[in-house]
Length: 162
Image 1 (cartoon, rainbow, N blue to C red):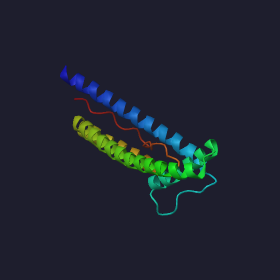
Image 2: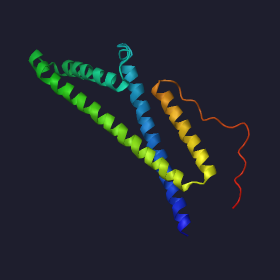
Image 3: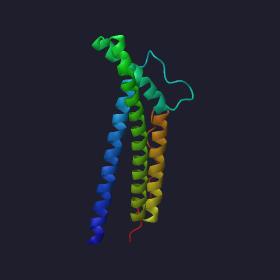
Image 4: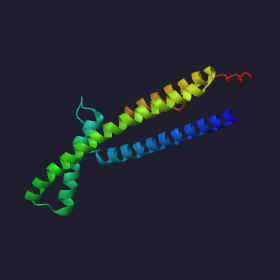
């Protein structure tokens, strides 16, 4: 009976992890598409800059232009508001890096815990799934269209009964 609860708990954990990952990926895609469209005429970040740093460097001027155009700011107001916007952009960049690190650690811990529950055969499949997810994430970060998961030419043999 105890084993049944472990299986159910592992299944729920995997489902929730997939839900969180899918939601985060969807939000990321929406954000990237929206900001690429906004920045189409302005060009990307300078070569050699980290993607996050480039995005934050573009954030401040864009926000200031938006405020200046929509609020008809005076030069004195612009001079007082710009440091606030820059400070906030820096804070957001730091917090984003912290969240990314915390999320990566939580995902690693979850994967380790799940792997501990799996049989050796399942663990091999699980590690393969994790590698595929990491490859798709890397492609996404590089701006390439994600490839669908590869299917083996032959179906996997059914698991041996215990």
